[in-house]
Length: 235
Length: 126
Ligand SMILES: [Zn+2]
Image (cartoon, rainbow over all chains, first blue to last red):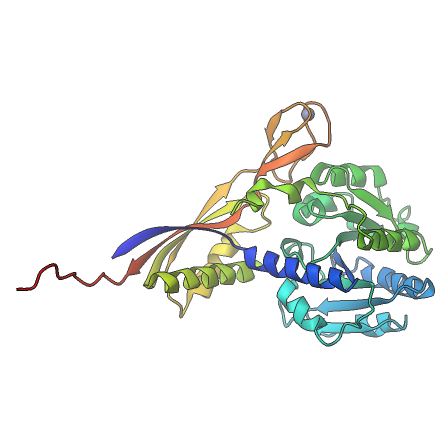
């Protein structure tokens, strides 16, 4: 017998449930996750290396997990900070999911960790759809990627709690139009903060660490318009 | 291409529901796919066909209903289509107090499947 059945299930509901569980678990032990999303070559690893070093200078227990499609040297580089670093290979999968992250943290993440930076797989499409239980979602783009990047990747930028511009030391050399970039960010994510950074000049490193710690202390983070869809919540 | 992960999640969820209902073959899956869901419909269709292979959904048809993005301003109550890439500030009063009404959907709406016929009840024995 043939029947049409109403299912009414959100496709990513399972990941969202795992993310909520992980968020609660980590919060209970005082750990805050910062999810870093960017295209390859954004300078994310260079900036993260400085964040880890500064956190350690300030006495903040910090750790980093970096996800790659295939072996790269990110972990080696990040480990120079002295912070615990774990590299995971996704075997071709273009994003991390909450359940996978929980599995990777199990038995590795030091108990006292206050901040955990997760360097997501390098692209701005797939990781945008997966909540990892983070308190702060940061989307990074370098000045070389152009002002229209936020319009090309509206889901990633639209769901960001914080947008970070990297490599501002070469902004002039590549004719980066900061005003136009800000307008484009505001179009897809009104009210989100845009933070200017340069790993080379050390600009914005402390500010990004401050934002991460504030999110961990329960200070309200930006609520993106795109995240607040009622469609996402009715069952 | 996360459409493959999404297709596999759909197959997993539908398979579980079919098992619960005692259905052994699924012919059709109807999805709502929002304009702002970050999913490429062609890639999803291609992935779905692959993901269905060897499951109760083998050969099932995927109907993806697009859902346009719409937003509303809490200040002046203007409603507008967001377009893609979306414009999420109010076009009337420029307030940044917009609310997304639709466009992020990624939902399984309904499925069509074949259930085992219920055994004929014998009403009266004589
Ligand atoms: Zn308005």
